[in-house]
Image 1 (spheres, rainbow, N blue to C red):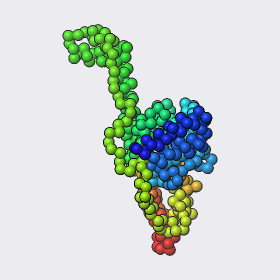
Image 2 (spheres, helix red, strand yellow):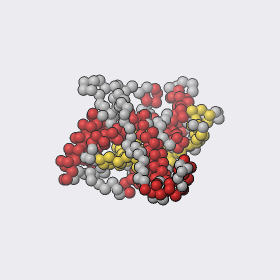
Image 3 (cartoon, rainbow, N blue to C red):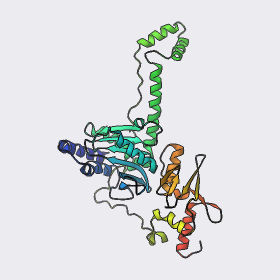
Image 4 (tube, rainbow, N blue to C red):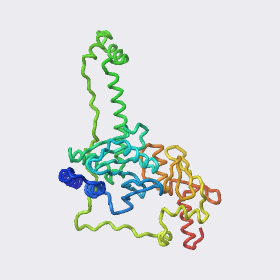
Length: 359
């Protein structure tokens, strides 16, 4: 929290110093946005954490930043030049479209000062997908409270989806309650109160409600009472050794085969065919997807770059919440013998074949 606040105060100073002169989009990203992402625990130099100009397909327009958990995109960030009109619907429509294709549930639209957080998969009009709006120059501390939801640790904990659900429910209940106690009170409320107050007539109750000024206090901000998990949004202490990433192991890594190429290699080696159906069960629901010719996975008409991305999208279609997914164990497929096996089984057989062992 302290590191994030420090970054936001620096961002605020830069905006106040240079904002009137204008800051272009690239400088906005470099001087206003990336320091915030770092403070939220995202390593902007590690492609397994953050990728710039991210595309699902070659013909797609790129997203400025795609943030990853377990090599699966979980958050898109679209940045505009400082002072750009974020009310222009085309910006929100554009990034929401990207997220829909990629199966990404959360998107951020920002000009480095104002941050707008959207739930892209909420089945409501685009204006109602907006979850939070904060402005750094207005209140850096309040901005930090909301932006902490986007920290790597809290995205892993799925906290933003829990708060969205409460926000979504409260918003609907609040609207319904206000309607019940509008200038002309709902007849059901009048009857209920008249029943509880037998000495008063329905007319007395209705007249009293019309005189009353009734307010209902729903929380408009998330609660951050619990302590921030150790290390969330913080960089290692100066002089501390960075955690060493495990060395790549296995025949696939030694041959320079990337994870994204394994499906294509399985097809080349006859373990899979284009059009093969994938099956999974999640929370009592049966889900299907299929392998397509370019090695990607198609789920409900959308194409995904990996089995894990497709698995996360499939889970989200059931629960409404993003959950990082190991697609290799999540999806099952029929092998050449007709047996339904996890895709990870085919991967193991491929590794054995490449190592010259019996599959």
